[in-house]
Image 1: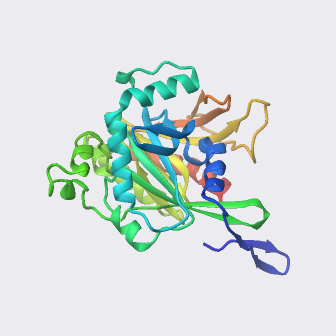
Image 2 (image 1 turned 90 degrees about the vertical axis):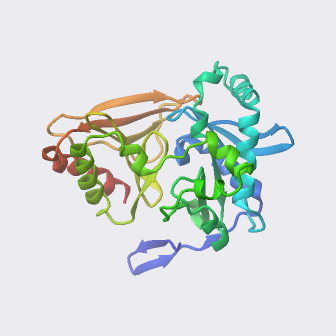
Length: 318
């Protein structure tokens, strides 16, 4: 990825810089966990069984723990490491809950957690072809994110998106007692087809039209979790979508307000002349308050107006 600065005489390349240490990547991500991944940071260097996990985070949207690992080299298997970490999580659930409760002062219980939504995020300046292909399944519980550092304090983050329609369960079933099989029995990363399966044919048709229109925006792609789907622009969420029984619910993030009352960058303000959106707000453990515009649609008649709203967010981001 090459970035440029638009100056009067033309585009000027922004020079790449390097992360000297793996710890530099970790510190950067942990300080910005909410902004980068919409996750709650729990702790660094969490020791459980014989493993030391770089970062433990919590996904409040899916009520699930997320392990984040940072790499600078290519001499490791994301599949082996990822499934080993998920296996140790599932075998030590009480330790993860205790760590969260002690760090945050909250009181999660075992039944509060959706262990099937557990996942591992790998963050590295680059991944090789073998690593990318090894997780190229529609429902693998891992995410690969490439992070780039440039001069002038510029950071770029891009997810390596799976393109295959094959299921990881096809591999898990080959060896009945494998770690992959044992983890796959409990961890169920959803595909897009899983998310829309319970909707009516009318709503499925509506989603197909919305999906097509959203992907007409340049540099956008579809990403799924167990409970929701997002369309991202250059790795950052443009819109979050949840599939309800009788409607499609959408959210456009506005931005974060920090404990000092300040915001980072320009706060997104939506022009909604019909007044059909509402605002949902929440507060992170750090005291940061987030909010989003929400809107639900049920028919094709509402599609054009939704796209009018989404276009505003796209133009704000681009």
